[in-house]
Each structure stands twice: as structure tokens, then as C-alpha cells.
Length: 171
Image 1: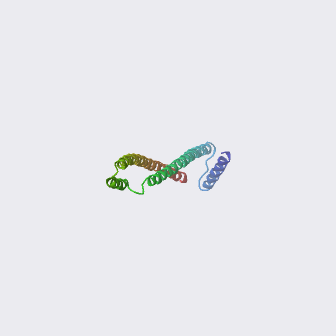
Image 2: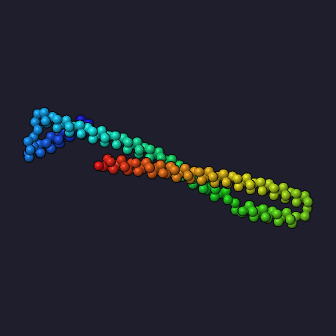
Image 3: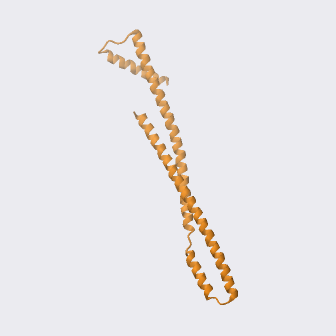
């Protein structure tokens, strides 16, 4: 800070000397007032610059954290999609039920018929439970995808704010 101030003071004095070649240089009290005004302007500029840099650092940290959240949610959504794909059966339940009914109609042994009816009842219950599970997972997947979109929006907002601060720093 002291070195910056010294350099700025030196440049101010040189600039004052350069302009002195065309006009009368301020002397005494006027010189002190001019230097104080310039010093206050420099201090104000440095204070603003420091505040912007601090804000930019904080925003970069928030952006990093938000990026990790988006990455994690993306992995979870992908895993859910894979899981949902794995939950599909090779043969549709309707087709399996139809084949079981055909076997039931063709069966003549009463005991074997009762066994097939019990098996068919359990199969329908399993299918219903699987459908309910798939439906719940689909809702969870949709909620996660909506949250992912929200988090991506937050990330983009942070990046826009960082870009805005960088523009202010460049000016």
C-alpha cells in the first residue's frame, strides 16, 4: 500500500510538473489542496477496487460450490435414468399375464389349476407393486431434474454476476 501510494504521488507530481510547463504551477496552500484532493480520489478508487475484488472472490467461491452441487445432481439424475431403464422388463407384464391365462385355460388338473391361479395372483400383485415403485421413482426423477434445472439457473446467475464484476474491474 505504501509503495503504491509513493508511486501514485510521484506520478501525480510528474503530471503536475508536465502541466506546469503550460500553466503556472500551484504553490503553497493550493498545491497541498490539489494533492489532498488527488489523494482522496486515489484512496476512494482503491477502496472501491478492493471491495469489488473481495466480492469477486466470494462469488467465485460460491460458483465453485454451486458447480459441485450441479455436478452431483447431474450424476444422481443419470443414475436414476439408468435405474429406471433397468426396471423395464424384457417381456411386458401384459404379455406374461396373457401367457399365464392361456396356460390356466389349457390346464385340466384341478390342483394344478389352483396352483396356477395362486401363481397368477402373486404375479399380478408383484406387477402392481413394481408399477407403483416405477411411478414413485419417475416422480422422484422428475423432481430431481427440476431441482437440477434450478441449480443450473443459480449457477448461470452467479456466472453473470461474476462477468459483471469483471467488467467493472476492467474499466
